Picture (cartoon, rainbow, N blue to C red):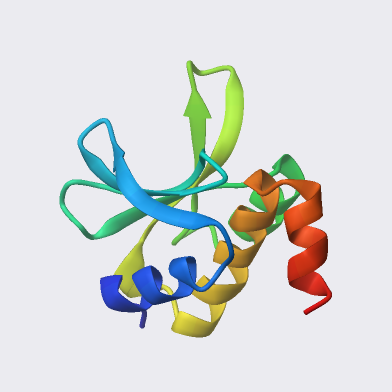
Length: 113
């Protein structure tokens, strides 16, 4: 199962990503837009995703992945316990999260490398 070190390594492998904080929680941005947050307890992660990906991921494994809503109106991502997610799956959903927030030109150059 995935660890914080693996998450850190995966996230920073994408272009134009940086580590910082958001509401006193460790977070990662791409081109200044947040796409990953780690809870203060260091065991739960929140990823920003598009609605289609959120629905698919939660539907495939509702015991692990939970929807995240902003103001009870806007579906913005998923939350999960890091230790319950295999590293390979984590890599796949982090990539989707990065693509959700990265500029189109950056995604294109990343995919054409």
